[in-house]
Image (cartoon, rainbow, N blue to C red):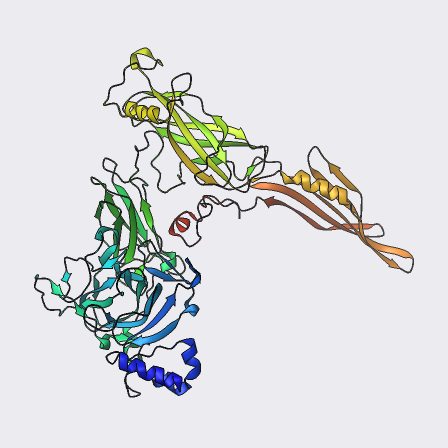
Length: 639
C-alpha cells in the first residue's frame, strides 16, 4: 500500500513526465504487474514505446568526505564513464530529455551521480543533422561509438557556426569551448536508426540544480533570430528505449571495429617554428584489416590555442588510412587529437597527444613522437642480461646553427617516472658537430644486478666551439645564438653543473625498457645438482653451466631375465651463439635395446627462446588509459 501511495504522489508531482522511479525498496513493495505498466505512456501492442532509458549511478559516500569512485569515473572532459552498470541506483524511461530552463523537471534529489540515457534515435530523412545539449555541468552525446556532441568541463551550450539555441535554453556560456565543446555533422543518405547514449555529470555543489536538454538540428529546421538554423527539442517520436521491429532495416552494423582503430602523430612537439606534423588515422575491422572508403574527421582539444589542422580530403585508402596535416601556429597549446569515422559514426578510442614544451625544443636529440618513447633511442641486445654488455644508441642532429662539442651521459633507475636518484652507467666520447651535422652516439656498459624494469635517461652535455680556434670554447656568446641562450638559461638554473672542459647539461631524453634478467642457467643447474637425480649418471660443468644426465631408464624382464630396455640421455645448457633471443639449447636421445639389438627411437634438439620482454609500458599508468594503449605492444622481442 505504501508503494502505491509513493507512485501516486510522484505522478502528481511530475504530471508532464510519464515516468516511474523504481528504487530497490519500492521494487519489493510493488507487484510485477505494476512494475510492467505504471508510469509508461498508454500504448497498444502495435505502437512502440518512445523515450530513452535513464540509469543513475551515484557516487556513494563511504564516510564523511570520502567517495566511492568505483562505479564511474570522469574522462578528461568531465563526462562520466560508467564502470559498473549493475550498480545503478534506479532506472526509468523519459519520453524526452527536457530538464532545462522553464521546461520539465529538475534532478533536485540526485546529487553527485552519473546520469545516463540509452536507447535508439531515428533520423527520419536524408540530410545533415546536428545533436547538441544545454546542460549544467558536463554532458555528451554518442551514437554508435562516436561522440558526436561534447559539452564538457562545466557545460553550458555548444557554440557552432551551423546552428543557434532557442532563447529559453537556460544554459550559461561555455567555459573555454576550445577545450571541450563541439558538435559533429551527422549526414545520411536515407532514414537511419542509431544506438544513442546521453551522459550527464550531476555534481552537488554548484549552487543550483543541474539541467539538461537534448536538441537537434534537422534538414527542415527553421532559421533563428541570428540567421542560423534553430535547434529544436528532440521529439519523443524519434527516441526509443528498445529498437522497434519496423525500423530494424534502418540500422546497420558498421564494418569498422572501434577497438582496432588507431591514430598517431609523427611529432611529439607541435610549436611555432617546427615542421608540419602528419597525423595518420587507420580504420580497421574486427580482424585488423583496413577498411577503405570511410570519411574521417579529427577534432583537436587545446589548453590554449589550437593548431591549424588540414583534414584529409579523401576517404580511407585500401589500408584503411588517411593522413591529415597539423600546422603549428603562434601560441599553440598542448593538444589532444580525437578521430571519428564519419561514414558509420565509429569513434577511435585511442587519443593522440602533442605538446608545446614550456622550455626550448631539443637542439640535438630527435623530436620524439610520444612521451618516453623514441624509435631512434635504441637499447640492444634484448633481453638485457646480467653480466652481458648493453649498448645504448641515440642519433644527434645539431640544430643550433653553431659548431658544438657534445657527449651523452647514460643513467638508469628502477621503475619510477620522475625519479630523483639516477645511477650513472657510462658516457660517450665528446665529438664536435657542425651545424646540421648528424652523428650517432653509442654507450656500452654492463648491468651487475637484475631488475624487473629499467628506466633510461640520456643527458646531453654541450658547449659552443669557435671555428677559428678549433676546440677552444668561445669567450663571448652572441645573444642571437640559440645554443648560447640555452646554455645561459642552464647556467642560471644549475650554475654548479659544468665539467672541466666547459660542457653543461642541455637536454634529456628518457625511455622505459623491459627487465634485466639474471643469467639463471647456472643457478638452475646448481639447484638441480643439489637436489640430485634418481636415475643415471649425473654431470655438471660449472664453467659452462651445462648439465648432462643419462642412463638406463626402463628395463623389460621375463621372470628374472632381462629381455630389453631403454636408455635415455639428456643435456641442456647455455646456447652458444651470439643471438640474444636464445637462452638455452638441449639434446634428448632415447635408445631401445633388446639383446644385441640397439636402435635410437627418439632424437630431439632445440633452443629455448628468451622470455617475452615488454617494452615501453609506463609504470603505474592505467591499462585503460589512452597513453598506455598508445605505447602498448611496441618493441617486443621473442614469441
